[in-house]
Length: 169
Image (cartoon, rainbow, N blue to C red):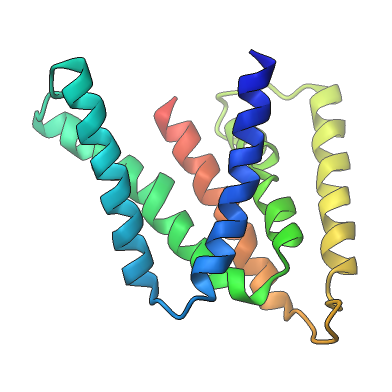
């Protein structure tokens, strides 16, 4: 169980490094999105073939799948590719890792989750840490400066993932 969590964490952080590499490769954002979506579709077909069946293609299922594809893949992944060349990888990882904080905040605001004092302090502490790291990352090691607009844009990524998570629940 823990090995799987460690593997998932490594895959997640490796994914962000790959996104930065892809974004700086010279390929356009639509090309990268199309290639990634094609890979996901290929994996989906393999899983369906191994299971011996296809999911239902009722209108409600297709609408749900379309909404989750936009909220959980196209919009955040496109934004990741857009901001990746402008941010150090570690900062991108830290900003995207705020997704649980954003999810808790949104689910509390929407009345899905109850506000608990200890969770609130954890969210405030986590957000404070992210702000300190982002503020310290304004001056990049290679001497160039990260424009704050890229940090703000990157903060929209965990918001999109959080909205998708709440939508799925």
